[in-house]
Length: 145
Image (tube, helix red, strand yellow):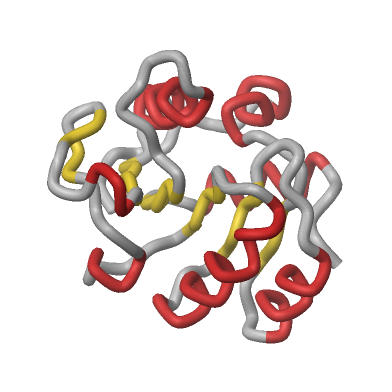
């Protein structure tokens, strides 16, 4: 079952240090741009992933093509993609050894969630960490991974 209770989600957010944000944008009008900035302000290292802007920088971080290209441990994969594309990202998160996947508001894929859980990942769907952090009183995360 995906995590749904406040205490479960708070624990996940407090145990997370490095987040790969799939669907990151360099456009300030996009939700992923603002969420990335808020997560960084809370102390997370956020690695942007977007094949359309690979090699550029968003909020000071190099943009990677895909999760495989990152080549370092990832605690959470935050998915800013349509529900239809979420399964592919979840499969890549499993292959990359991520500890959890977070599907943003409006993103739901029960089959992908089941695959992630079967592989040992924690799953959150249809929520936003930038909203949950203040609402749940999540402690500031130390910048060191």
